[in-house]
Image (cartoon, rainbow, N blue to C red; front, side, top):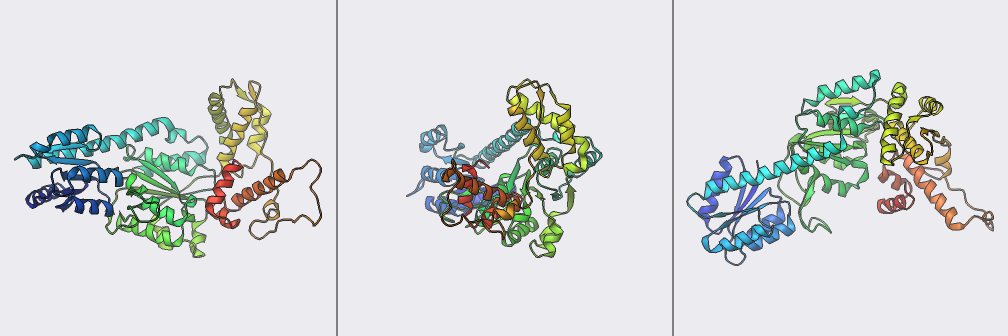
Length: 464
């Protein structure tokens, strides 16, 4: 049901709508002035706003404009008298108002119908978005490539757990396809037509992650110029996927635990709780049992998340799937690049099957994509990724090593420019920090003692 704000300067109408709409299961707040409505909109998130047009001082059109600026996702229904009719029609035509209702003896029934129309539009919009997204991305069991025993077992697990509403914890090495499994659980579930929202918990600083997950109100912090719904609300009725859950700070873990227990969220800067209906799927590439033992992850949150644990096997454990995966990526990137590459070179395929693949399926995909881009014949020849020197991170000075200093009075080798030399060192430092942090950018920035914003800028600069 919806969270509704009703504004009318006639107390009797406010009381009548409050009683009628609460009987239908809606949560209702009423105010009797335009200024009070504006204050309410500034302080809370509403699924729907109903306001009279003709009110003293601040009228309903001003309330509509304010709602459009501060909370643009909240539809507005106007209540009009005969003399307000033209203004209401213009407001609807201009796209500001969702509907208008004339005051009459049948006002309550008309408003109920209008509310149903607005909510149906919202539901259809969400369903159409979900269907378009899934048609484009093909995220289903069919997209989990592999016929090995390990993958067949994984697919069967997905089919079994998808029909439940339980929280799922997916664990596995980086690059194994944990988000793909999460999407498959969603698509195979009764929530398939509802949103699937993915968020990487390691990609946000703590304060930003809180506002992204739970939303915020206008003025909650610098730059909060309007109300914004959090991802838990956006995923309403569907699934939220919390990737890299182990990178969440202990303070955020406490807040997430409360959300899982109470099934409500409180936007940053807000005072009221908002009920949520969402399935939670989390993922990590770390050993959470060990993290719990080392007091880096809350034990109570761990048990809340791991109601149903799913492990995604490493590529090394299912080498028989490598030919299927390699040919899948060959077809995908050859079509995207409009290349007529018919098959993969046998020696290259044998080499792929014998490689250790520390980066798992993601590394294999990147390797095949690069080979397709460089291939000039109708047969794909693949060059295996270069082995990374084990001491590279220490030599780069990340996490306890030190950068080798240029001796006083030394000059660069002939033909080497300082700008390019410095750039190569910066790039090596960035890559080493990413390696040490398992790709978690906020942690990599901490290793280098630079801000997350600076780290992101350098990542973009060096196309990492």
